[in-house]
Amino acid sequence: MEHTRSGSDILVRIDPGEEIHAALQELADHLGFDAAAITSGIGRTRNNQYGYMNEEGVYKKRLLANPSELVSLSGNIARTESGDPFTHIHCCWSDDDNNVHAGHMFQATVHVVAEIHIRVMEQASMMRCPLDGLELLGLEFD
Image (tube, rainbow, N blue to C red):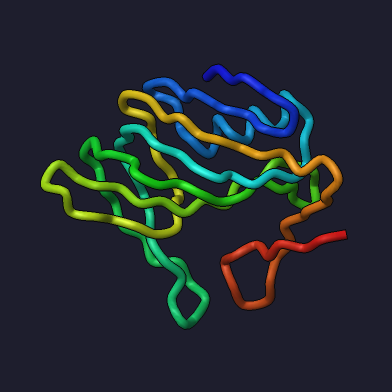
């Protein structure tokens, strides 16, 4: 992974074999920011685990194992109550037949490259906290 920064904007290149969540969490720790918006992402990834939260508040997961085009990615980065970085990302992929797969991204391994734009929110405080009855960690603000 490499990155460049201009003010609050960061452009990240994540390389083959790296997992997107892990790479972005590592970047948040390395640069020391607590709140950011992930505004866009493109590339080619594999072993994409994605899904949705059902009406009972439980995530249902699917796997798109073959390399696929990452055509859209967005989300945010906050901290948990213990101070660890937490990434919440939604994605759209296109398989080699141009079928679209989309939802909450649980994991994705870079196959060729991923290029992701992040905007750090220097004056914001965001924290992820457990929500009763849901697998989701809720976003709270100071």
